[in-house]
Every structure is written in structure tokens, then in C-alpha cells.
Image (tube, rainbow, N blue to C red; front, side):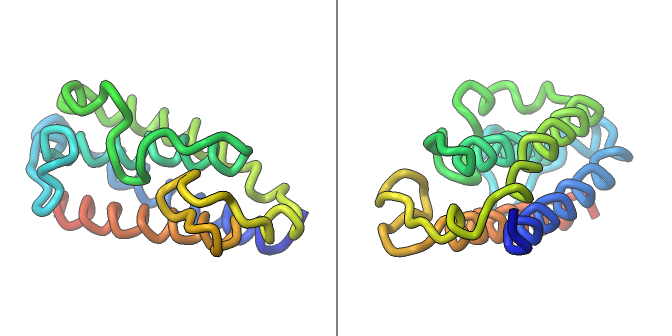
Length: 155
């Protein structure tokens, strides 16, 4: 266990809490609103972006646990691009809770794990030079930018 791993989890946890708060009050009209600059994500709606963000937290957790990231961070998971408009806010909030649980393993990571360098191409931010901690931080910064876009669309 390390303070660095705990900090990564706290960053993710804060993002998830913010996203859950945004979505907990969203109705279908809000979920159908377009997200400027995010048109390539599913159908370009708030729901599609929220679903992509939610799925990405699960991919980040899988990557952190030694898996390979499925798709690029920020990209909708395979098969969700066409169905994102059907997602409802309560389903997304529930999936975010699953993402939080999966990411809780970040807090258990040792400094030695965080200092390893994932192979080039294992995930979007893996260049053979960045440490696991740096890659995870980059993934979470990307998530933060996606949440900013979602917040703007919902406002």
C-alpha cells in the first residue's frame, strides 16, 4: 500500500462522486442533449459520453490490475456506441458504483507497482517510459476533461 496509490483512488473517487451527482438529477431530456466536441462518442449525447466515461473507469481498473486496456481511454466500449441513448441515469449511477469498487484496488498498490513501466502500446498512454502511476494519472486527467465536457453540456 502507498500514499500514491491512495491518492490515485481519491482522484478517481472524487470524479465518480461528481459524475454521480450530475447524473442523479438527469432525466431523459438531459441525457439526450448533445455534447459539443464529443460527436464521435456514440451518438454524441450526454448519455453516450456518460456511458463512455463510466465504461472507461472499468477499463482503467482492469488495466491497473494487470489487464490490457480494452479500447482507448475515452472511447465507448465496443457495442455501446449504438445503445448509449438507451441508458438511463440510474443505470449509469449504478455502473459508476461498480467502477468505484473496481478502482478501490488502486489504494492497495505498492510503490514498487506504481514505479513499473508498462510496455509501449499496452494502453493509450503507455509509451515505454511512463511509470504505471504516470499512465494512471494521465488516464484520470483524461476522465476529468470528459467530465468537464459533460458538466458543460448538462448546464
